[in-house]
Image (cartoon, rainbow, N blue to C red):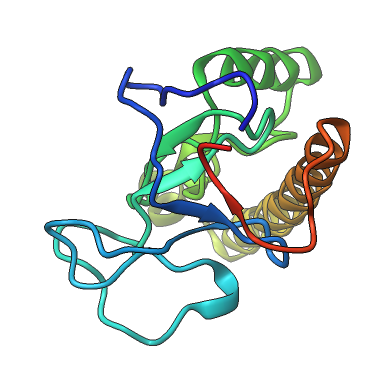
Length: 175
Protein backbone atom coordinates (compact mmCIF):
# COMPACT_ATOMS: atom_id res chain seq x y z
CA UNK A 1 0.00 0.00 0.00
CA UNK A 2 2.67 2.53 0.89
CA UNK A 3 6.21 1.26 0.33
CA UNK A 4 5.77 -1.78 -1.88
CA UNK A 5 4.53 -1.37 -5.43
CA UNK A 6 5.65 -4.76 -6.69
CA UNK A 7 4.45 -8.21 -5.80
CA UNK A 8 6.64 -11.10 -4.72
CA UNK A 9 7.33 -12.00 -8.37
CA UNK A 10 8.53 -8.52 -9.38
CA UNK A 11 5.41 -7.62 -11.33
CA UNK A 12 3.91 -4.15 -11.32
CA UNK A 13 1.29 -3.21 -8.74
CA UNK A 14 -2.28 -4.32 -9.40
CA UNK A 15 -4.31 -1.15 -10.08
CA UNK A 16 -7.62 -2.97 -10.62
CA UNK A 17 -7.65 -4.30 -7.08
CA UNK A 18 -9.43 -2.64 -4.20
CA UNK A 19 -9.02 -3.25 -0.48
CA UNK A 20 -12.39 -3.70 1.24
CA UNK A 21 -12.72 -1.62 4.39
CA UNK A 22 -15.25 -4.06 5.85
CA UNK A 23 -13.50 -7.45 5.58
CA UNK A 24 -10.00 -6.17 4.60
CA UNK A 25 -9.89 -8.55 1.64
CA UNK A 26 -9.02 -7.78 -1.95
CA UNK A 27 -11.55 -7.47 -4.74
CA UNK A 28 -11.33 -6.37 -8.34
CA UNK A 29 -13.25 -3.51 -9.81
CA UNK A 30 -12.72 -4.87 -13.35
CA UNK A 31 -12.69 -8.36 -14.79
CA UNK A 32 -9.18 -9.59 -15.58
CA UNK A 33 -8.52 -11.33 -18.91
CA UNK A 34 -8.66 -15.11 -18.55
CA UNK A 35 -11.03 -15.15 -15.55
CA UNK A 36 -14.77 -15.86 -15.64
CA UNK A 37 -15.52 -13.48 -12.78
CA UNK A 38 -13.58 -10.83 -10.92
CA UNK A 39 -12.00 -11.70 -7.57
CA UNK A 40 -14.43 -10.84 -4.78
CA UNK A 41 -13.74 -10.12 -1.13
CA UNK A 42 -15.50 -12.06 1.63
CA UNK A 43 -18.29 -9.44 1.74
CA UNK A 44 -19.39 -10.06 -1.83
CA UNK A 45 -18.57 -13.71 -2.56
CA UNK A 46 -21.22 -15.73 -4.30
CA UNK A 47 -21.68 -19.43 -4.95
CA UNK A 48 -20.00 -19.18 -8.34
CA UNK A 49 -18.03 -22.15 -9.64
CA UNK A 50 -14.32 -22.32 -8.84
CA UNK A 51 -12.12 -20.99 -11.62
CA UNK A 52 -10.35 -23.62 -13.72
CA UNK A 53 -6.94 -24.61 -12.24
CA UNK A 54 -7.75 -22.82 -8.95
CA UNK A 55 -8.81 -24.17 -5.56
CA UNK A 56 -10.22 -20.76 -4.54
CA UNK A 57 -11.45 -17.83 -6.62
CA UNK A 58 -8.55 -15.66 -5.53
CA UNK A 59 -5.48 -14.81 -7.58
CA UNK A 60 -4.07 -12.06 -5.38
CA UNK A 61 -3.71 -11.92 -1.58
CA UNK A 62 -1.94 -9.40 0.63
CA UNK A 63 0.78 -10.65 2.97
CA UNK A 64 -0.98 -11.49 6.22
CA UNK A 65 1.75 -9.80 8.26
CA UNK A 66 2.98 -6.58 6.68
CA UNK A 67 -0.13 -6.22 4.45
CA UNK A 68 2.04 -4.40 1.93
CA UNK A 69 3.04 -7.11 -0.54
CA UNK A 70 0.52 -8.64 -2.94
CA UNK A 71 1.06 -12.37 -3.44
CA UNK A 72 -0.17 -14.85 -6.01
CA UNK A 73 -2.91 -16.99 -4.57
CA UNK A 74 -5.76 -19.35 -5.39
CA UNK A 75 -4.21 -22.68 -4.45
CA UNK A 76 -4.69 -24.56 -1.21
CA UNK A 77 -0.86 -24.48 -1.12
CA UNK A 78 -0.55 -20.68 -1.52
CA UNK A 79 1.65 -19.07 1.12
CA UNK A 80 0.16 -16.12 3.04
CA UNK A 81 3.43 -14.25 3.62
CA UNK A 82 5.99 -12.31 1.61
CA UNK A 83 9.54 -13.67 1.80
CA UNK A 84 10.62 -11.33 4.60
CA UNK A 85 7.59 -11.96 6.80
CA UNK A 86 7.61 -15.71 6.03
CA UNK A 87 11.18 -15.94 7.36
CA UNK A 88 10.05 -14.26 10.60
CA UNK A 89 7.05 -16.58 10.94
CA UNK A 90 9.16 -19.69 10.34
CA UNK A 91 11.69 -18.47 12.89
CA UNK A 92 8.95 -17.90 15.48
CA UNK A 93 7.41 -21.31 14.80
CA UNK A 94 10.85 -22.91 15.07
CA UNK A 95 11.72 -21.05 18.28
CA UNK A 96 8.45 -22.04 19.97
CA UNK A 97 8.66 -25.60 18.67
CA UNK A 98 5.10 -25.58 17.38
CA UNK A 99 2.99 -24.22 14.54
CA UNK A 100 1.93 -20.94 16.18
CA UNK A 101 1.34 -18.99 12.96
CA UNK A 102 0.08 -20.86 9.90
CA UNK A 103 2.08 -20.24 6.70
CA UNK A 104 -0.93 -21.07 4.51
CA UNK A 105 -4.40 -22.53 4.39
CA UNK A 106 -3.51 -26.25 4.15
CA UNK A 107 -2.84 -28.12 7.39
CA UNK A 108 -0.06 -30.19 5.80
CA UNK A 109 1.94 -26.96 5.33
CA UNK A 110 2.28 -26.98 9.11
CA UNK A 111 3.03 -30.66 9.40
CA UNK A 112 -0.41 -31.40 10.81
CA UNK A 113 -1.51 -34.89 9.92
CA UNK A 114 -1.33 -38.56 10.83
CA UNK A 115 0.87 -41.08 9.08
CA UNK A 116 -1.32 -43.65 7.34
CA UNK A 117 0.85 -46.48 8.62
CA UNK A 118 0.30 -45.29 12.20
CA UNK A 119 -3.46 -45.56 11.75
CA UNK A 120 -3.29 -48.97 10.10
CA UNK A 121 -1.04 -50.42 12.81
CA UNK A 122 -2.89 -48.83 15.75
CA UNK A 123 -5.00 -50.75 18.19
CA UNK A 124 -8.31 -49.15 19.28
CA UNK A 125 -6.76 -47.19 22.16
CA UNK A 126 -3.89 -45.83 20.03
CA UNK A 127 -6.25 -45.10 17.14
CA UNK A 128 -8.44 -42.96 19.44
CA UNK A 129 -5.34 -41.17 20.81
CA UNK A 130 -4.18 -40.37 17.28
CA UNK A 131 -7.59 -39.10 16.20
CA UNK A 132 -8.04 -37.02 19.38
CA UNK A 133 -4.56 -35.56 18.99
CA UNK A 134 -5.22 -34.71 15.34
CA UNK A 135 -8.55 -33.07 16.24
CA UNK A 136 -6.79 -30.99 18.92
CA UNK A 137 -4.10 -29.90 16.44
CA UNK A 138 -6.77 -28.94 13.91
CA UNK A 139 -8.66 -26.86 16.49
CA UNK A 140 -5.47 -25.01 17.46
CA UNK A 141 -4.58 -24.51 13.79
CA UNK A 142 -8.06 -23.15 13.03
CA UNK A 143 -7.86 -20.80 16.02
CA UNK A 144 -4.43 -19.65 14.82
CA UNK A 145 -5.87 -18.82 11.40
CA UNK A 146 -8.64 -16.79 13.04
CA UNK A 147 -6.07 -14.89 15.15
CA UNK A 148 -3.89 -14.30 12.09
CA UNK A 149 -6.77 -12.86 10.06
CA UNK A 150 -7.79 -10.63 12.99
CA UNK A 151 -4.19 -9.39 13.22
CA UNK A 152 -4.15 -8.67 9.47
CA UNK A 153 -7.36 -6.65 9.77
CA UNK A 154 -5.90 -4.60 12.65
CA UNK A 155 -2.73 -4.07 10.60
CA UNK A 156 -4.77 -2.56 7.74
CA UNK A 157 -6.45 -0.16 10.17
CA UNK A 158 -3.04 0.77 11.60
CA UNK A 159 -1.55 1.40 8.15
CA UNK A 160 -4.46 3.50 6.89
CA UNK A 161 -4.43 5.58 10.08
CA UNK A 162 -0.63 5.99 9.95
CA UNK A 163 -0.69 7.53 6.48
CA UNK A 164 -4.00 9.38 6.85
CA UNK A 165 -6.06 7.41 4.33
CA UNK A 166 -9.85 7.49 4.46
CA UNK A 167 -10.71 4.10 5.90
CA UNK A 168 -14.46 4.59 5.41
CA UNK A 169 -14.39 3.56 1.76
CA UNK A 170 -12.61 0.87 -0.21
CA UNK A 171 -9.03 1.73 -1.16
CA UNK A 172 -7.31 1.27 -4.49
CA UNK A 173 -4.51 -1.27 -3.89
CA UNK A 174 -1.90 0.86 -5.62
CA UNK A 175 -2.64 3.81 -3.28
